[in-house]
Image (cartoon, rainbow, N blue to C red; front, side):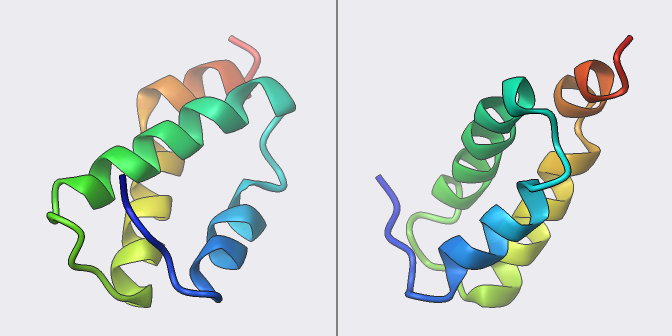
Amino acid sequence: MISLSDAEPDVVCRMARDLPLEKRGVYLERTAAILQRRAGRHDIGDVITAAEASLRSPQVRHTAAGI
């Protein structure tokens, strides 16, 4: 389990708002997995980087594009 500061969930949610509802779960799971690899040590920059990487992942883009 990872813990986020007060501002970090807002960043993740803002980045997800343009995703179709059915892809948000995959996006959140991928973002959490990236942050977990950091063994719980992260800052807001790491959260942004993880969220951006999740948005670029094939699992999120593929279905989000309606393919």
